[in-house]
Image (spheres, rainbow, N blue to C red):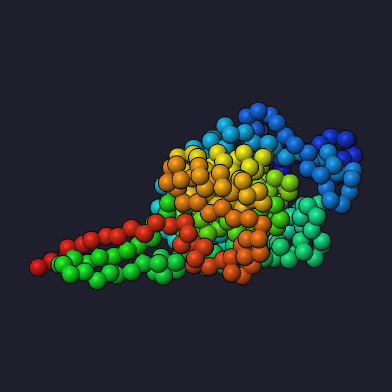
Amino acid sequence: MSGEMTLDSSRRLGVAKTYKLFIGGAFVRPESGRTYPVTSAIDSADAHVVNAPRASRKDLREAIRTAAGAWKGWAERTATNRGQILYRMAEMIEARREELHLQLIRCGASAVDAQSEIDASIDRCVYYAGFSDKYQALLSSSNPTGGPHFVFTVPESMGVVGTVAPEQAPLLGLLSQVLPAIVSGNVVVAVTSECRPLPGLVLGEILATSDVPAGVVNIVSGASAELALELAKHREVAAVHVVASEESVRIEVERLGSGSIKRVKAEGDAFLEHLTGPRGQGLSAIERWVESKTIWHPVAI
């Protein structure tokens, strides 16, 4: 981040670099001040060089409040404008390729796999940018009626969508959850991979320079299971998408989500291949995060 020591200079001085939460377009410290060390898969000397912020439930609630405040403005933007912003996001991921590549390798990916994940992430941003002005026509309909009315069904955004990223593919998995939600006018509170949070935290820095309005995407890191349950029970969250290996977490997310009648998708590790593969993007992924609004308009007689 601008004005802060680089990872290499931090290591030479024996100082741990600490990332921050990305909430409301700003980089903020956790309310509790807690962090946790992120261990590198390639160099034991990195074990305590990078600290990730450990968000509390209060931090998550603040992210939800901020996102809710940004929803109306984002939903009212034109589809073309939202597409332009997603194109800009793709450009900024390309500009930060070197740093993302390093962080993915530190997470255990090979150099080739890291490169492929970045390429796929850029392609996914471009894909949804192109879909921004097309999904409405595909999900809308003119419905037959027996009375003197025109009846139309159109898609509308839901509001705040909470996501919990998979532990593997920490960049592509996170983007695959966030992009279909925001392209349709929703706002997102995203929890990064707990063990591999750095690509997601770097994504926050990318979003800050990608013309994404403040509060549209908020990124926090910490104990994934704890934050997933908080998302599931918060009444201002309209929908939740959780990828978690523990079945008990998925069951509890579904139970808590039913209390506020929110849309819940809780998947295990086996879902990762679908989420990050070619079938993980498309109209069905967008349709998951929209509501269908039916309009009755009287026919002039």
